[in-house]
Amino acid sequence: MGKLSARLGQQGEERAVRYLQGLGYEILQRNFRGGGGELDIVCRKDGVIYFVEVKYRGEGAWFGPTEAVTAAKRRRLYLAAQAWLYQKLGREAACSFLLLAINADGRIELIEDYLRW
Image 1 (cartoon, rainbow, N blue to C red):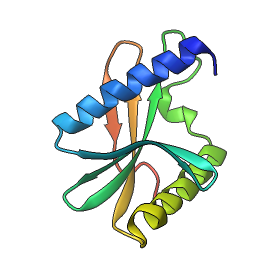
Image 2: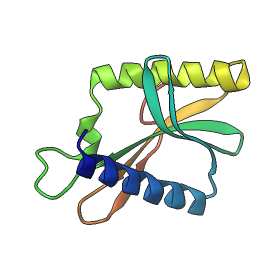
Image 3: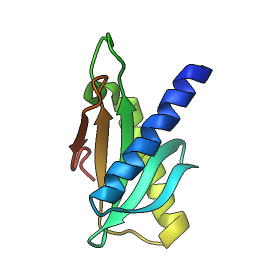
């Protein structure tokens, strides 16, 4: 990942955190690496753990943020989520995956239950 991409990703995640906090989510961790994958944001709301994938797509992108999560990426997200649960909680818990898409025009779209557990 280039420096510009990394900076845009970090800015997108900062914006995502503020957005989620505004909706009442408690941020538990950012950029967790484990199980062969990475989780952008782990948060909790109403007793449910949410694993959040943040996707930003600039103007002129060939496809939108929702199409950016491939089957291989989904598998890595599942593995990372399992690793987080067992490392941090020592057990399974009620959880779900969210996709937070930030579009070039600044719109944020939160897609709940993005990946079925």
